[in-house]
Image 1 (cartoon, helix red, strand yellow):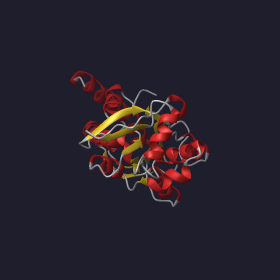
Image 2 (tube, one colour):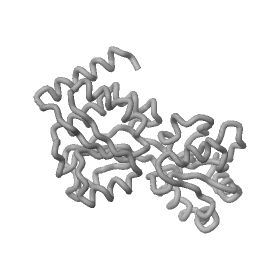
Image 3 (cartoon, rainbow, N blue to C red):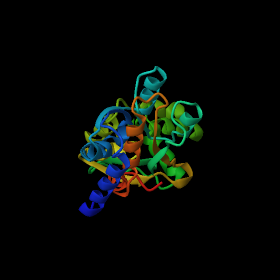
Length: 248
């Protein structure tokens, strides 16, 4: 990323937040966005004087925390938060979009590469595999579960799936404990010994939107909006791109 572009984005953020007193902002962040968020958070703190406190979990866990009344200012999920706005849980007009990611396949470096060039080839690869990793309750994992049902092979393949908390699927494929992983790219970036092979065929792929919004119960709504504004500056979007997201 060019230093000048990043400096310009920080300057823009400072102008947007100069009238906002320093605050502590609590952010619920999907684990799939953690790498990009942790790169950008210190830049935002230095530019604005705000302090960020983040909780990183899979989206269903974050939504359960929200529904249980656990306080937060901003939430960032690996799907579109528009339904949460319609449900009155997030502030109307606060929706920010950071990028999108498809579902694809990765293997341990040097491992045999499954054929997923067509829907039928992917189906055979799933049926022939001994063990497969997914993100489980993560957005891509839940999509894969629905896809298996659509393809009529859930009964055969589901028992072979291994998953766990955020980062588990990356570790499983990196250590060669599964034949391959079916996942979005962001959770795999930064884990060594992984070869990303590409996206599933378009007819069975799912593009997951990464988006965020401000809680209707936020203690620091202005600072929360400032954070979302910062995360959608060109320099910040470039960081999301470096960490596996494509332009929305």
